Length: 499
Image (tube, rainbow, N blue to C red):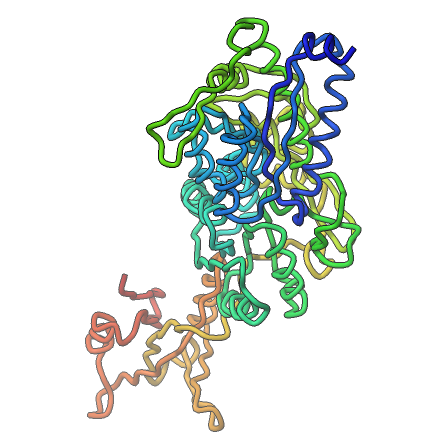
């Protein structure tokens, strides 16, 4: 009976490289084995079967040696994994030499590309695909500056150029960038958070894996930064691992088996690969008889798959409805259909709306869009709860505790006290400015989307030797001793500044 099965079912060896100690890896491993069982239960008449060879690996060097062992010893014709972008960069080069497709459901760094290596196939979303959605959210709430906090790895830094480009399209300024090493201790992370607090920007975009993100948000909460006035935006990779039922902002327990998007992608990867292998067998059954030949010119010697190229060719053509949505690869990687915008408050999460490439931000999928990226669209979204359990939208900035102040010259001349008056505080020696002209100036500053701390400088104007002239006052602006001068003229109100 077993001989008949062996003749009827062609076993195709497939390697799986996964980090079983991580949240992503533990869930993906369970989903991969579940997918094998489900697929062949649904397709009992298929003449091929995937034979999985699981190998654990949690670092770059280990992943490289594991890939070589799978190719040379187990003679695998495809490898699912590895997990991280840094691991994938090394393993995909080995796969190209062996003509074995490297299929990753979790290496999302934009720097990994099928144009560089046709044997790399990404069954996950490229991180750059979310840059437009994030920029649209920031623009929607009319914030003009953001701070970027990101993991200092290929995964973390790979998204930053794409985010910066999309922010520029909306005239949104990246005021500060803070890379954080994945090996950072609590003290180092707290220093980064203190640097963020020292800026005036309160809109923070976070892009990092869950192991680092869980520590960062725990410490941010301890530092009272998950509070009124702040707006935190986290990218897809981190939000996919959010645990709203956990004790902290982000579930940090690797033993958790809660399903996440990486598990869905891993499940769909197995189905796509199984379909592709079956198509290769149907179209060229003779090529399945000998799946490997040696490539003696390689040091160390690498076996070369004779069906890996065919598997890759069928894989990129495969389309079906998977657990993660429509499975369709364009230029060797999964294409996004929509991003879900989620508001997380304490232990609860709420869907606010969606973003699609065709319609931008929408309250509901398939609902006609009345206005793209406009403030009116904000009212169609479900109202979010902001940090500090606030319903009012954060303005996105605050007056910085430290930093340079705008030095403004205040001309003082008898008879103009109603327009400008300066007196010095006897205790702090600071100048206190009052008057109509100064009130108008402050109202104008209040309309700006950022804080402008002021340092008034008293400048007497008169006929005595201790007083100066208007020309001398304006010359101080040219010398950049002062950046701006108020002119309390009875006929007009003027502001002179250097730019």
